[in-house]
Amino acid sequence: MTIAKPLLMIPGPIEVSPAVTAAFSVPPPSHVAPAVIEAFGAGLELMRQLWLAAPASQPFVFAGGGTAAMEMAVANLIEEGDHALVVKTGYFSTRLAEMVRRQGALVVEVEAPVGEAPNPQEVEAALVGLAELGPIKALFATHVDTSTGVRIDPEPLARLARQYGALSVFDGVCATAAEEFRMRDWEADLYLTASQKAIGLPPGLALLVASERALAARDNRRATAPPMVLDWHQWLPIMRAYEERRASYFSTPATNLILALPVSLREILADGPEARFALHRSRAEALRGAWRVLGLEPVARRPELESNALSALRFPEGVDASLVGAIAAEGVIVAGGLHPQIRGEYFRVGHMGYCLTQPAMVRRTVEAVAQGLATAGRSVDAEAAVAALG
Ligand SMILES: *Cc1c(COP(=O)(O)O)cnc(C)c1O
Image (cartoon, rainbow, N blue to C red; front, side, top):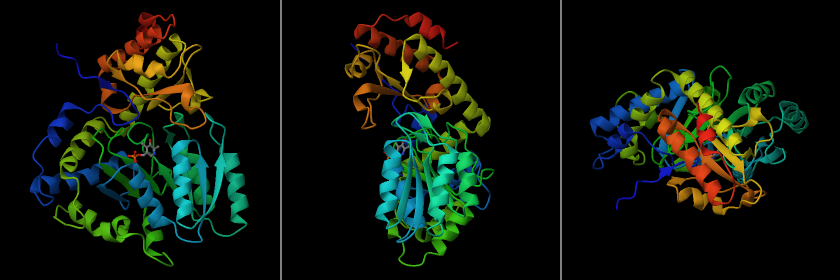
């Protein structure tokens, strides 16, 4: 008996397209192989398109995960004695705040209850307070918090940062390529992600785009340089060389993943970034309809906070974390809770990237969740839930 490969529907890693799999499934190429040079250069150019970033902005790609991308941003932008503000919506913004603090900065945190997000007025009030102590170096926020499924609106926060002379840095690890982000129009200074989320590759690449202002902040550091492996001054000549289609070396890139990067970005950008954001919006909306039919309530407390990249869903009455295993038994892998305050009360379904172009995958996911709920003793209408997908 052959067992069908389970469907991976967690908030990263995600299912990747056959063309992406074909691109990385080759014997490891050299970092100076012509195909790698071309893919690296094209990948950097395509990132600027997907990020809707200015021509003078600088994309960086290096071996690492989302946490490494966060650390690169913090290490280059923040130094001892800086003042920074972190907008907190869950698990990953807590991590970000800790990183900024370890850099020796004074950190003010603006927090909201689980499932909520601070509003721009609260953020501005914190900026006003912080500005009394001196210049503010940066505002940090998580675009989509993976532990709650809460999405903030980056635009007013980026605007507030500009107004208060601060850089704005957004963790897009669970959002980039799924949620609308306009780096240039919004004058945001840094947007970062990792390859295994909506970018649609296996784990292993850290990706970020920095604005000219962000690059200047690194140039103008008062004291020590960042650790070499994260330092933009080490990486800038490398990125520029590859974009000019020249080989270069500082630390070996993940060459198989580099080959797959432009393949995935071209699929994502086939009809432009807006079309990709719209695909996530409409499919996530349909999924939310299916969850409602199944009696599942989101962790996010208001509809406008619900991310299009994942659903964080509370266990209904009488159901516990064994639901995740019951869904896996149906061939679909979903994730358990992550936020420390509600860890045992909910589960998470990732729905970003390639799977949204495959209606059968989305349907299989809804059917598996419905069957899992039935196994857990709930009476559910699986057919109606699938019908809600449209
Ligand atoms: C997944 C994720 C991270 C961490 O990425 P790793 O690749 O696991 O280091 C950071 N922030 C957010 C919002 C994420 O979803």
